[in-house]
Image (cartoon, rainbow over the protein chains, first blue to last red):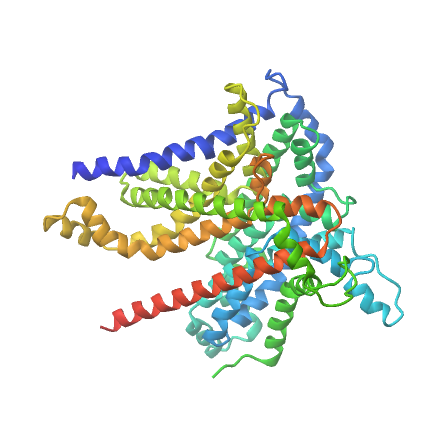
Length: 275
Length: 273
């Protein structure tokens, strides 16, 4: 018995050392840089400067929230319908949903410029009917589209998993007891898929709020999100301290949002809380 | 037997069109005979040809694969050991705090993970008064770190499914614990280890954000190279490159699916007996 506990320690040690060094220590570094100046002396001026970026934070969180809601609205019926198709189709379809996730998101985002641009695919098509080119690129809409496009699979997969695990006899029972389709969706299907919704929302919201490439390419410099500001501090302005302070605030804000989400999704006795 | 309505089928098709439209566009324009990514002027393979002669891109591709294989191998070994250790850990308090730390890289925005590691490396570099710390080593550490939770979380469920009594029985029958592990536990958790390793490998291949903050000038990966290329006006060679990556990923995914369905069948036939 003692032997195995020593072996156990031996197995745990490398990982625990690794995670202290490369997960915990880097986060401590963020806090350290956020509260010091370039000479390493303690200061609150980085945190005080955060106020200047309040509108950027608000814009990022609203864009992230809009993209998340759109993803949920697209993915929910998709996952629901998919779970009802033939099993062989389901496995092919989930594979096709996953495939884009493994392709360079940079290029996938960039190719929307080919589609949305002034002389892009859509405008050339509209031009055939004599319609003036539309300004689609470099707008807030294009940035949100980019987010929805990039992160939609992350919403579909957990929802689909929740839907396919669902016990179909529960729905049949509800219908037998005189439940109409809408009521059945609200009282049976929706509560059963709340864990899927929660993980989907998390997986879309976090990368949307913190993105910088999507806003740079599809927003064309017109739209600056908090990810752009942080990236700028590290890659062009070289103000690591302000960048660290901004990251710290971003991290705390996301944690608060996720905490709120968990608070609502954990109370599973009444599924109606979110609506 | 299928009760899918035509409307539902249409909806599924529309979502797939949305997901694949940019990729179709990209593939079409990769065969363009002119430099434009807007107007298709004719079919040609010139961009593919140029791609294979582009030394920078080929070097970046080589770097990406080297990094992905090395980091996935380290993460798989470390992660499997950690999962085995965690599974047999009796102190619940330590166990739950280790699991919380494990989840941090998955929950944190990638940009924060990236800059936090960059700050650590820069700080450590300054401490040892070494400039230009960022390079292959830092990329490797960063990649292993963000892959670890995925490996652990794909091995842990398999460990929970294996009956610990078999492991104990093997030892009672005179098997050395190490041998018992490799003869009894290891085969049972192997599918979890393999899927964890594949996940780690593909995550590394595609990672841009974390690599962006932890890479150095003399070791560029493909996503970093693509990023610097898309800063300028993109030529169809980037689309050709992505089409090739798409093809490779497609093949990999099919292979994984086949392997998965085979192991499922095996398990089912085992269950029948």
